Image 1 (cartoon, one colour):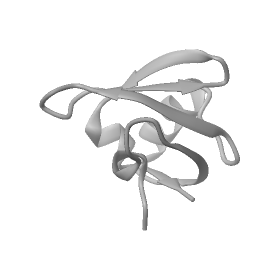
Image 2 (tube, rainbow, N blue to C red):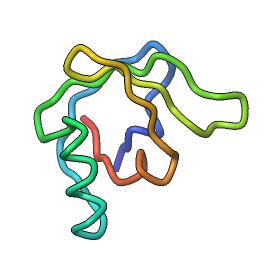
Image 3 (cartoon, one colour):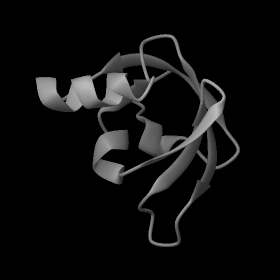
Length: 73
């Protein structure tokens, strides 16, 4: 299973499924990340946390733990 954390900087991938507890899934969906959404990985902090992405025309920072709950194609 490939997650958002596995996508390299400069790469684009499409969301297949969200995993995790219902509160975590709801929080991710409230940020605009839903099935079928394309996500572009802009940059990753030197220690790997957080990850900055472009989704639906805006920039968003995600923790590694959140990115691991987003399955990508």
